[in-house]
Length: 232
Image (cartoon, rainbow, N blue to C red; front, side, top):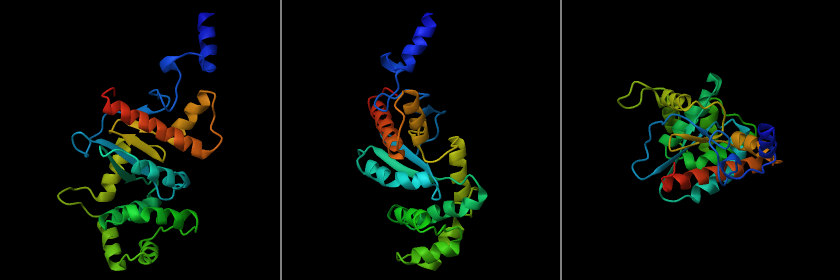
């Protein structure tokens, strides 16, 4: 009887403390997932935030404006980066496009325009030629772009892996099975999908995709603050 009553109370959110999940007080396994610690590159005293994304993902596209504002609002100790994900080999050109734009120093500026071209204008940019033609209107030299695109498939510096292989290894090591997903400090995974499930379980189901985005980023804020306070 006590077990039954406890289950009922939890289902209606009447129990206080860690049992009740929320973006402001996130619970591991409900609001976010924890994975084995992955290598960090941001340096001592920094909090590394990584978005795993795909240019062709409609949810990544929808999240982009909110994520851009969120990143700009972060403290100087937060280092943001992206890792492109291609769950199928036919989408590797999008991974190469991100790597090429990064090499040319144009990723931050042109990523919103790439999303718009794919999701609004339905130009899917799945060949290097179509990418070069599209990017030329923003001042990207076609030859320089194609060279950067091709370089994404060649071993990087002194490593045996190509930049594409390194990107694939990163999302595989993080066990990413859906995008967008945000990794914090190489250990904590937050996503709109997880946040949407958490809201549903808490009896406060999201009615719009934006609500799942907002919940996910609030969860990320909470985790970042806990890392600063050395509680995580």
